[in-house]
Figure: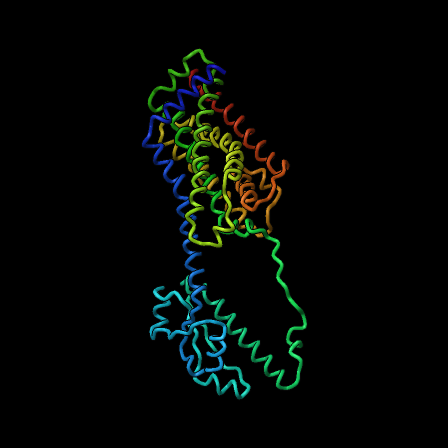
Amino acid sequence: MKQALIVFVKELSDALRDRRTLLRLLIPAVLMGPLLLMALSGLIASLEERADKREVLAVGIDTAPTLKNFIERQTYTLKAAPEDYEARLRATTLLEPVLVVPKDFEAKLLAGEAPTVEVVSDSANQRANAGVGAIKSLLWGFNRERSTLNLAMRGVSTELLEPVDIQDRDLASAQARAARLTGIIPMFIIMAVLYGALTAALDSTAGERERGSLEPLLMNPAPHGAIVAGKWGAVALLGMAVALLSSLSFVPAQWLLKSDVLQAQFSFGGPEVLAFWLLQIPLAAGLSALLMALAIRSKTFKEAQAGSTLVITAVTLMPMVSLLNPGGEAAWYYWVPGLAQNTLMMAVLKGEALRWSQVMPGVVVGFALAAVALLYVARSMRAAVAR
């Protein structure tokens, strides 16, 4: 253990000495997630602000005084749409859908016919497309009011229109509703672990071999297991340190959220940071050892980087599995490194209590992967000395 600790301190000091590389790792890990979260909150805030304005752009609304009166009674303000609204919608310079009313609206309505009203938008214009639902809700409300009045004038009970009373009951908590938008956080924490360990893992194996310092280190009387354990401990610690900084960066980021609704629902403090950090320990242990095992056979740092792309791609895609699977969380999620941590962190964001049956599979797989990979690294080092 004493020899492993000496190697651990040596590897840690070497990694911290390369400040330029550390900054390149820390800036994306610490800033990218909060910046994306704030950008998302800005988009939501702009949509909320537009909803508060309660404005409707319309064409030909003056030819439909009945519809105009209904919309204004719903506290909406009607504004004339620009003449080139179609071109502007396609060019995404107009961010509001347009209500188009035909000239014969009132005549058809009085004749008992159904006039055709268009809600013009562009599905490629996401901001404009988001406002289509509000205008359609107004039109559906107008239809219900006209139907109710027509039945009442004929002495028919209006309750026949709604034979079933429908009430919404949402079982999701405020945290669970916010997690639909803040689900990007676990992905950034996982990537922080990966990139925090990546450079140190490659440098302590392939990097030292390229510099010619690995063979002299292996010639020391210290057991190869102690050398490997010391290197692995430093790599895993760096991955955990970057993950901790990335988690902490979301604490001040939530104070800068522009959306009042998201700010009220999103709660990320000390307990969440601690839970996230503890959940990353098995992932950091397994990934650090796996990256070292992939790099130990490489002769140069660049060759080791190329070999690690498969691990980077796999870890990056793991959180996508839960998004692409409409069947919900499966039991095997907890046995897959990266996917297990993403699933558990999402549960923490939703305010759910974690069970040992959920946590232990990730712990077992993470440390089992670390043990197998470290054994391979130690054997590779013995082979290098024998040569």
